[in-house]
Length: 213
Image 1 (cartoon, helix red, strand yellow):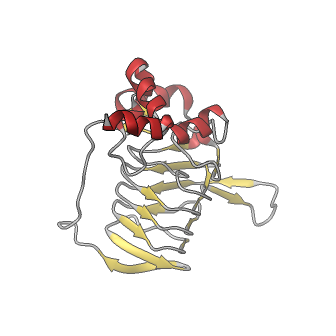
Image 2 (spheres, rainbow, N blue to C red):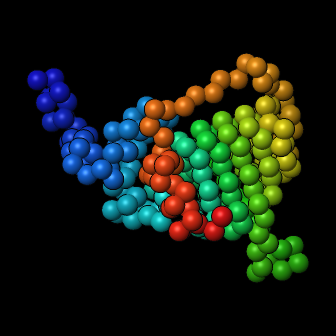
């Protein structure tokens, strides 16, 4: 009875459960419940049916924006633009590792205007490792490499690379605030692993068919 009452009060949850049961491609509704960025019916409907960021293969907020999806490779439970106000730019190659969090109003850039001709975009490669955290209102500039377990303080502008990872960085330009002890960091994995909307075991074939890297 309590379950029936819940679904009557939350009809979109009911639709999500029905889709997950009868259509295997919608299992992500049920199997990402434990994710930090769990996929809800509302998120999917606004994105894939209404068309806000429809071309992204991962869940995104309708107020965020992505360009150059074909140049962007993400990891498990890593959904840039899931939170409001983000700008995710795949002018060059943008790679983000597994289980990394991207805060609201962040900018992740992999290309910029030429200083000599602003009509020309210069593509670069921006890489963010696994288990990173990009705090809200931060900007990662083109060509930056952040190693695993890099935590970026809110409001930072990251202009250079910190490839060794295991650190907290912050400021404008960002500098190391604290080194992290690799023996103390916690890794986790979910039972069901999805890269955006795609099961992990199907992502390689999707990548070869649809992405440039």
